[in-house]
Image (cartoon, rainbow, N blue to C red; front, side, top):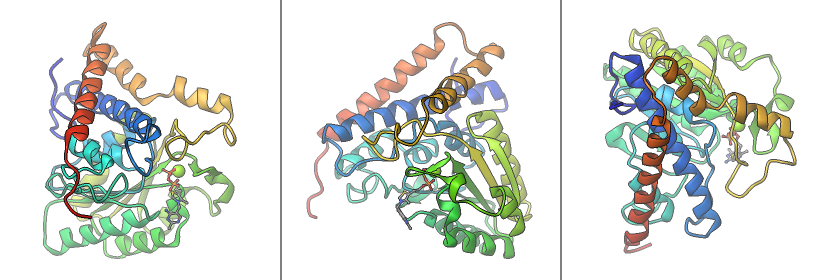
Length: 322
Ligand SMILES: Cc1ncc(C[n+]2csc(CCOP(=O)(O)OP(=O)(O)O)c2C)c(N)n1
Ligand SMILES: [Mg+2]
């Protein structure tokens, strides 16, 4: 059952997918713990948990090299972990400790790890697309063999700046992959109720981007879409827009409920019938790559990594000056 990390592709898809499963379990346990710690006052300021959205980040990151970059929005822990950020450094950052990935001065929404190609998360809806656009321009201008990926939400799709960025990416045929994680809601607003002009992919196509919609709860489907988008970008054929249909199990931010704007049936459908971890584990069992009891072992290991990250954050010093 030994497997490489999500960032170290192997030729054997089941070996790779075991790495994806590990990373998705790590994200889930990390996010659950981060929310608990916020509610207990250990993590200041709140977090935006990505529980339920693990496959979108992991499937895309698995298609990337270390040199390829990722920019992320306010809900960005899963992207950072999938791109290879250390759980210790991330947890310490959430705590505001000096050992955090942004030296404890950024917090949940301002993560960065330039050595792993994670060029930053930020809280301005849609802005991650502009940051990745700039890096895609740099890659093309310098003739570098790499791409930039922007993650953003379905709320971000309805901001003007997002389309300004996608327009330039198209006009300049930049190696940008724009991934919209459509989790159906922007805070408590159902995005469909405030969206005109047809589907997201139709809108992206009208700007000249190659556009496709994938099942964001199927890590294999996300991976395949990202591989194809990367190949197109590297070949000089311009940007791709990917809508990844997904769902966040939590409220918008830590401690927020969902009962006021979602039906119990909708939540049950996503959690019970489409869960990305359950589905990935199922595929691996079909391939003969996951035996009875293996999932529990991997899950226990993910919990241990999170336990160690919490201990690291607790024992780390505060920044010297503010
Ligand atoms: C420019 C801007 N406008 C408004 C906000 C407040 N805000 C924070 S998150 C959010 C909704 C984002 O929804 P979506 O893009 O779907 O991402 P999700 O939270 O679903 O992951 C809003 C309106 C903001 N941070 N930035
Ligand atoms: Mg959303």
